[in-house]
Image 1 (cartoon, rainbow, N blue to C red):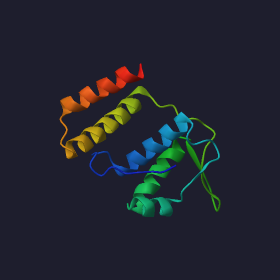
Image 2 (spheres, rainbow, N blue to C red):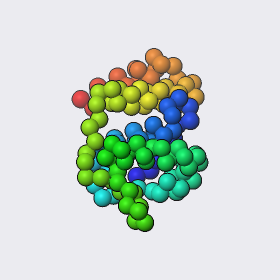
Image 3 (cartoon, rainbow, N blue to C red):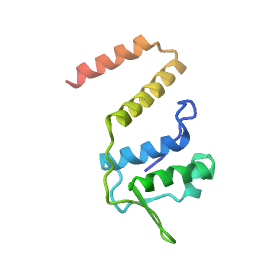
Length: 125
């Protein structure tokens, strides 16, 4: 699993990590027993503060999504997380914000993005 942080999204970094792990587990991309990067390694990879990753892991452990085994590492737990409608909406909002920001960087308008999505939907039907 490759984690990423969007510095422009306005979503706290720890929250982005929590959501990525929960959605990956809910989708089946991460399975029970899969090993996660160490706190230190993930902080280095994402170029963020160690305490930020520790906060995300603590929250995930509290929710039963991950389990830390002293001396062995951090693993995906047996309990599949329930992703409620609010979290799904928050994730969709984050995806849309990222999409619109990237499109704007390339000079596309919101209307052009919507038109493109509409064409894509029609061609997949």
